[in-house]
Image (cartoon, rainbow, N blue to C red; front, top):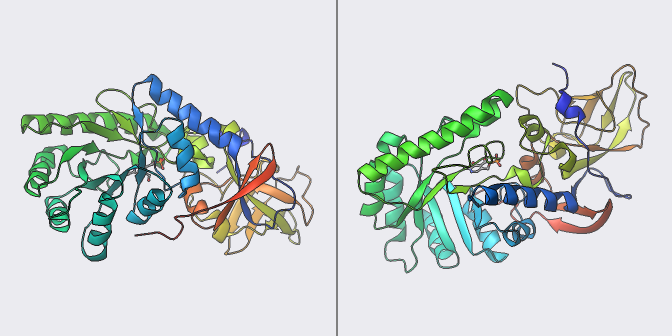
Length: 373
Ligand SMILES: Cc1ncc(COP(=O)(O)O)c(C=O)c1O
């Protein structure tokens, strides 16, 4: 499978000098441009933005999103919510069907006392367990019911949503709304507009079912980076994209990110040219991650080596195949690799090297790294 035309349009962030590779470099000017662009697109449609923090896992970037106009943050796990709360976030949605027992129940109660908290459920059992976990708590989170719009991961169906809403009411928890994640957009560029339509129609069906059962809700939340803008119309009130903050190769090819403002790259050094026709970088699977959608070739893009393919990754090696007409790089050259999927890349590093105008200005810790529960 050849590299795509859109791969060729990706402009990597400039790398500062003196890096101890592999390092993850983030261009803050581009981050700010990505934040402003998504905020403006959704503002124009009258839809609230609640970015997913799993991409940056860090209050540093959450604060910039909130300052630009985001209404609150989204997370997948309580650990991310705790780190955001420590960093000053006031409104956090755990967009996940949390099974609230033991330590998780204790942490949920503590979080509900610290921030305006909302939590996902997708089953009668999950709602009942949430009710038990929060029984007697002074601060009770709001609940959003997840519906599946075609991803086939989590989420009940619109025809069962009223049953779950009754369980939420029985658990004496306030019902705020419904949500979905059109993750089937990631199955290929041709799936994006259909997934956005699926988000709209599934949420509309869920709302109709709730209305018929006399439940009134305020929040209708959808979201993935590729579908966020397309889906932003009635009945959706809120979008939860996360990856847009940095962008990556996959997003560019799904047209969810601007190729000129991809904000994150892994800086890697050419450590070997021993095998003719290729070279080896010091950023392997433990820096670039292994995510590779079936519709993309290779493990990232190296804009400085047009047409090169990262054919395989070992823990600490990336093996690159070079086109015949490309002058090979020299051992010691440092190149920027734009990863396929940025979220696991961030989760593999302790710190991000943040740049402005191509110069390193600070190191930002990935504060919620390793917070997987
Ligand atoms: C429930 C939920 N909401 C929002 C998002 C953000 O989507 P994206 O990664 O496409 O920006 C995700 C991503 O996994 C998600 O699972």
